[in-house]
Length: 158
Image 1 (cartoon, rainbow, N blue to C red):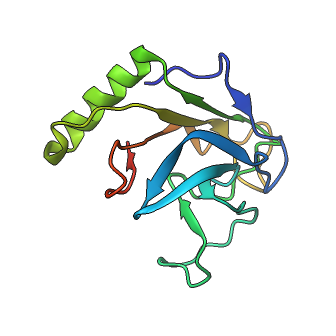
Image 2: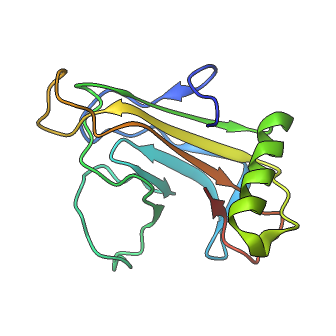
């Protein structure tokens, strides 16, 4: 597991909430398009250039052109229970681990070298309509986003 909460930022504890715009230190190439801003949305979406506030399940690809990654798309309400943390890092220990993880799980990326990581953690969140005693959706869900050194490939996720 990637460490979290220390030095991380939290999203607001509200239904359908989101972080404010996060300006990235390096661009993330997603399907060949460079993005310099992201939003961490409480409902399990990391979006580029625009926030995704409501949980409205739709089939992919979306017709409105929104660019986002949905690692944990669910109707989450962290205002009731749980936290959502995020951070951008270039810590050498984290980069080494990210490099090792990508090489292990993506055999065709044997020369990958992480230069930057953006980590999002959903911890003990519950669903909309739940209560503080409702069992959590998932104990901890982590989403590390790694930027590749080449802009010809989409960013890697693990």
